[in-house]
Image 1 (spheres, rainbow, N blue to C red):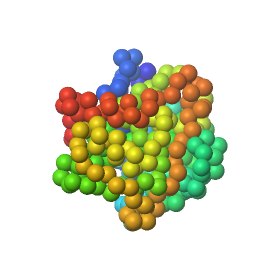
Image 2: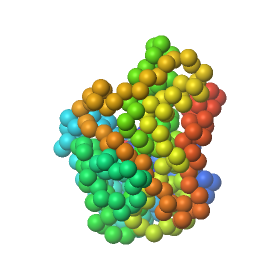
Image 3: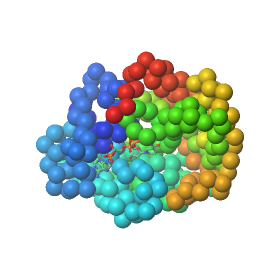
Image 4: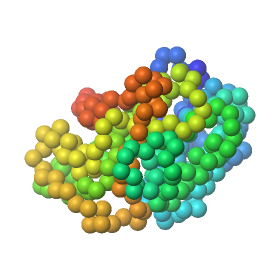
Length: 287
Ligand SMILES: NC(=O)c1ccc[n+]([C@@H]2O[C@H](COP(=O)([O-])OP(=O)(O)OC[C@H]3O[C@@H](n4cnc5c(N)ncnc54)[C@H](OP(=O)(O)O)[C@@H]3O)[C@@H](O)[C@H]2O)c1
């Protein structure tokens, strides 16, 4: 199977290179190789490569930056996705588009399934939902994979931020009223390859680690695993205002994934352990 990845220089793009199964021939394009907002270049690059699948991981992912430049966010995450999906279909293949728990309003109390009503709070969430609609409107072999709280090598991530803060400060405050499923990029990448190999039905799929946590619980686990004595106090989102609103409850239900693959992703604690072990061995090299 020939797979082309957009956004190959990011966190997921990095993991997709590391988790590549032997049967997959990978073409990984960074932003410098392909800007997905350039429709002609996108069609030419993807049709020329003739992939069986495109994993569309390129996106404007800085949530607060998206809030400041909503039109740019829509151009990259919405219109850019239309370009990529059209190109994948023109190449005779399918497209797996990465979306986010930020398409939900965060007021839920039970894990969201694939049919739960959306209601994004932020410009980032609206742009990712626009990308979903562009992708699904095209028919064909299109998978929309919503994931969340991804950490790993290849970009700015929460684990690195907490490790650095814990090494510099005696105490930290971390928000305790947002919940999600912290997901190691390597586990996510492996599950995406499994979904493609299983030839699952087109449509929306939720894929994130098993279990759930608040950012505060996640930070406590990071500090403990790193053997630091740093105190981690809980705080509210209101105490830590950011330009873009975040969903309070973002936990995704993975029942559909479990039924299709016969298993879920490993629990987030295992993902954290895996990432820290890889960091210690120097395998997770920063760009
Ligand atoms: N990380 C998470 O927690 C998370 C959660 C839910 C969903 N997702 C989704 O998962 C996907 C992968 O995210 P990630 O964590 O790998 O993010 P990432 O590390 O920010 O990677 C995204 C990549 O896309 C590139 N890019 C930005 N604009 C582009 C453009 N116009 N054309 C081509 N490439 C462009 C970025 O390049 P530059 O660095 O040069 O801008 C970056 O390398 C995205 O669709 C994201 O929305 C991520």
